[in-house]
Image (cartoon, rainbow, N blue to C red; front, side, top):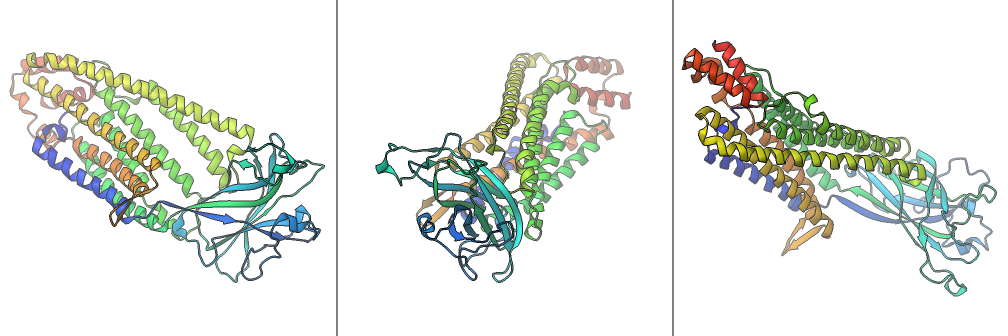
Length: 544
C-alpha cells in the first residue's frame, strides 16, 4: 500500500483535515446533546381488574379498563370474595397508551417489563421455584370507536424470584414480597395508535397451574419506547451520512482500480469496511413509518454485527500488513487464527439474537431467559462469544507488540538504508502510528461516553441549557465511527503522485541502468511486505 495520500500529505494539510473532522465530530455530539430529546421514555401502567363472568373464556372479548364500553371492575381482590368472583374470572386490563394519548410509528419499538405485587399470606406462600402462568392477549386499533383486532394470544410462563424480608408471622400478613421485574413483551414496530392487553391468571389445582405463587394483588407494567424527536434526529443523521460514506467509498475504489496492479488485501478490507458502514447508514427505517415492519430491531442487530466483525478483522489485517517481515500475508487465509475467533463469536451472537428477537417476530411475549434450557443455551452462546473476544484481543495485542518491536529494529537501521527504502519504511511507521492513535482515541471516547451515560441522570443543566447526555452519546459515537471510516478511505487511498507517475513515466527509478534497477528490485523484494512487492514487480515488468 505504498504511496498512500497520508504519506504524501504535508503536516499542514493533515492538520487541516484533522481539524475539519474534529469540527464534524463536535457537531455530532451537539446535535444529540442540544437538539434531540432523550433516546427513550419509560411509562408506568397500573392494570385494572376487570370481571369476565362468562363460562367460555376462550371466545374473544376485549375488556377495556376505561372509556366507552369499559368493563365491570373491582378495586381489589378482597372485593371479589363477597361477590363470589373466581380467580379465573378476573382479567387484568392495560390500555396503551394512557388516556388522551396516542402511540406513533416514530416510537419505533415497545419494550415492556412486568412487576407483580404479591402479598404474604401464611396459608398461601410462594413456593420455591414457583412459576406464574399468564394467558395474555394483545389487540390494536387506530380509532377510539373501532373494534379491537387481535395481534397475539399466548400462554406466558414466568419464574418468580421473590424474597420476604420480614419474619413470616401472622402480624406480617399483608406485607408485600420483594420480587424481581420480569421481561414481558417486545414489539419491533409501533404501527398503531392504541393497544390493549388482557392478562388472565388461570388457576388449576390438579395441573398445579398458578398454585403456590402467593396472593397477587396487582400487576404493574413499565413500557419503554423510543422518543419521536430522537427518532427524527437519528433518521436525519443517517440520511446525511449515507451519501457521504458512499461517495468517499466510490472515490476510494476508483483510485484503487486506477493502479496498474490488482488491489491488495488491506485495500480490499478498507473497502469492505466502507461497505459495512454504508450498510448501517442506509436509512431503511424511514419505511417503518408507513409499514408495520416488526423485524427492524433484528435487522439493525445484524447490520451492527457485520460492521463490528469487519472492523475487528481490519485491525488484525492492518497490523499484519505492517509487520515489516518477510512472511506472505496478502491473503485472508494467512489470518485464519486471528479472524477465526471473530467469525465464531459473531456466529454465536447471531444465533442468540435469532433465538430471542427472531422468535419474537411471531410471539412478542417470548424470552429465551424464562426457561432453564433457554437460559443455559443463551449463557453458552454468550460465554463462547466472550472467549472468542478475549482470544481476539490477545492476538491483536501480540501483533501490535510485534509491529512496535519491528519498528524499533527498523528505526535503528534507517540511516544506513538507501533513500527509497528509508522513505518506504518511514511511511509504513507513520501510517501505523497514525492509525493506532486515532483508533485508541475512538475506543477511549466510546468507553468514556458510555460510562458517563450510565452514571449520570441522562441530562445535564448548565444555566438555562439542558444537555441530553444519552442522546449525545448515541449521535456522537455514531458520527465518530463514520468519520473514522471516512478518514481511513481518504487518507489511505493511493496518492495520484504514485499511480500517475507509475502509468505515465514508469517512475524515475527506471532512469537508472538496467543492472542497478534489477539489483534494487531484488533487494527490496526481500525486505518489503506483500503490497510493495506486488507494486514494484508490476512496475519492473512494464518498464523492462
